[in-house]
Length: 93
Ligand SMILES: [Zn+2]
Image 1 (tube, rainbow, N blue to C red):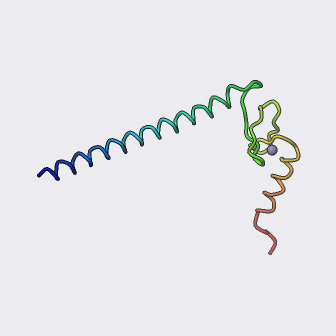
Image 2 (cartoon, helix red, strand yellow; image 1 turned 180 degrees about the vertical axis):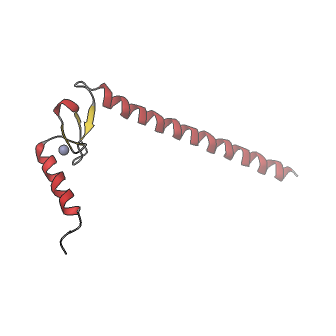
């Protein structure tokens, strides 16, 4: 009988510990996401956009836009377009 109670207590402790860890993890994750989001908007020069080639964030005023994608420089725009053409299936039969 005593053993059963001890097992129950251990189970309850483990359960709550797991729940607490899960909540801590969720809060930590939310905090990180908020931090990342606020970092993007806090920068000067308006909205931050991500280069589709190198994934670097640049201010919208410094970025180039092409086909709905953002790029940090013409070099990356060219490389991105080049890669897209290479990825397209060969249409000649
Ligand atoms: Zn880039």
